[in-house]
Amino acid sequence: MHATDVIAKKRDGGELSREEVEFFVQGYTQGDIPDYQAAAWLMAVYLQGMTDEETKYLTLAMAHSGDMLDLKDTVPFAVDKHSTGGVGDKVSLVVSPLVAACGMPVAKMTGRGLGFSGGTVDKLESIPGYRTDLSEAEFKAQLRRIGLVLTGQTAEFAPADGKLYALRDVTATVSSLPLIISSVMSKKLAAGADAMVLDVKTGKGAFMKTLEDAETLAEAMVRLGSEAGRRVVALISDMNQPLGWAIGNALEVREAINTLHEGGPADFREHCMVVAAEMLMMGGKASDTNAALTLAMETLSSGAAWRKFRELVEAQGGDVRCIEEPERLPKAQLIEPAPAPRSGYLAAIDAAYIGMAVMELGGGRKKKSDPIDRSVGVIVHYKVGDLVQKDTPLFTIHANDEGRLAEARELVLAAHSFSDTPVQRLPLFYRRVAE
Ligand code: URA
Image (tube, rainbow, N blue to C red; front, side, top):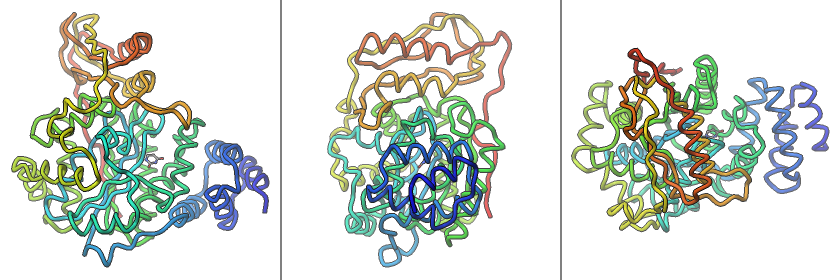
């Protein structure tokens, strides 16, 4: 079999066999197929799509490209969560320790930033020393010891996703249903959790722009997970405006820390409670939504979730002084508030523009090898529906370069639009999808 034949077949709209998909995934993972051929194949998949069968073969081939963790000998039951990618989405940083603090083991393999959307691995690496490359033995030992792991995919776990993810990020092939499904589910299957909550984002700052596409994505992932013997629930949530106030790696870690101390933005806190409640119900820690929400809120207010986060950072080698005193986290040199150009009700804050502004500041990657600046980002000060007064700070930019700051300011300003009449607030969630 030749890589060019597989690329051409997909380019021309053909349906790939299991053998062809496995050949391509294995060849690329092992380095026999170079980046340029993989990039051509990704674009062919992006343009032609894949059938359900091809998507399943791709997911399984990617999951099996490394070790498949079996956690049966480690904990009786483990839960996981994953977001399909958003702007200001730091939910995992709060929800994972919170659920683990309720005695429900959380085993999570997480990703880097992708396009304009941030990634938990990049956020966690804002904490000096924090390791996101745990080995299988370390993963299991830590899960057994503290009931919580938040690590990245490595050469050992779902390496095909690690390589394809980085290539998609820089070849405009991110927002493809089969590529997102296989990327998310390969990591989830390889990480071994028994049950998982998928936070499927929809809207301007999500890869799925319409509710219909988000539903297709959610339903496909729930189906795939169930076929693989896992319990999966998907929550379809809004990503038209950023979640919370902070967008940018270290800024988001700070906001997550505030939230773990019961502060933080109301929308973000509520979002975390709903996701945590779903995980707690799946793990049998609560029998209904009200009981699960009460348990989640109590665990946050008792400080147990914060203490578990601290334990996690310490276990993975992070400098705990940086989370105890978050002013020690990476900090930008230029911090500039931008005044509102007019008074009015905020009609929209286009999350994609905000994500692009953070990339412009150096907080995301344009090429695979780009280093990222973890200190930069944007803080928005209002949410859709809020009444804004002219000249009050509308948002604040954290930058390390005057030119980049000016470009980001234009983008963030363009993301905001106003109305003279009251505007309805956006919902946090649209739908729950389960088998
Ligand atoms: N999260 C992932 O892990 N992969 C994607 O493709 C999108 C979001």
